[in-house]
Image 1 (cartoon, rainbow, N blue to C red):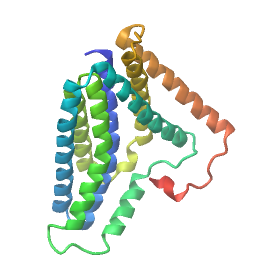
Image 2: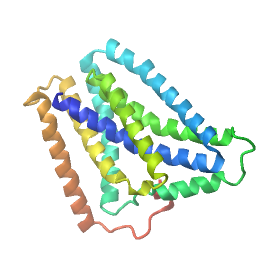
Image 3: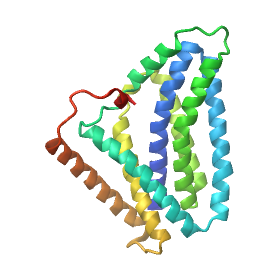
Image 4: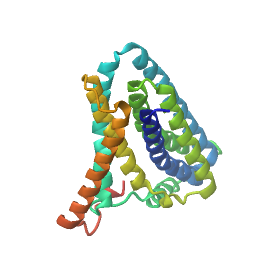
Length: 253
């Protein structure tokens, strides 16, 4: 397997795992408060919609759009997405943004859903909450699968990495229940942000006709560059900028 394929698998798997941890929090809350049948049915329905979306959009992208055009456009999208993940991860690591608290989100969701108990084993509220949670979190996964998979002509590999992440998170979730705060989510987001940004720079250059030294191996140099940049930014922000003493309400999400 080439260097770019390995980094693609790691990026898609990491991004999918992060998003599915957040989706799992919502599904668990819906199941506990409204009933497991409705929560699982909502999650399964959202998964089907996402799979259809990948097949409907990804296949035409791979076969109909010229590769260089695809790489420039998708490279730009990956840069926007990756830099956004990286920015938030740096802010959290430096203490300027509150860490994502899955336990707090779980408790808040359970509290809001428990106000009225479902009348039967099938509950529309539980189904809707689980469906929306998985669909919204999954859309970002779909975007990453489509962009990385289509630009490298490895849509099947990207989809497989995402599916593996869903299975792993689902199995871990079934074992540990709602103890999701132990997941090193910010570290995973930092890694994913670095890899997406590296791919973005790499594909924009490739699509524009630039030939990177060492071909796919140059991705490792880009990853190292962004790792060093992130580490330096965190160190600088910890020293030079005032830390937030109390997170704002919107920082919980």
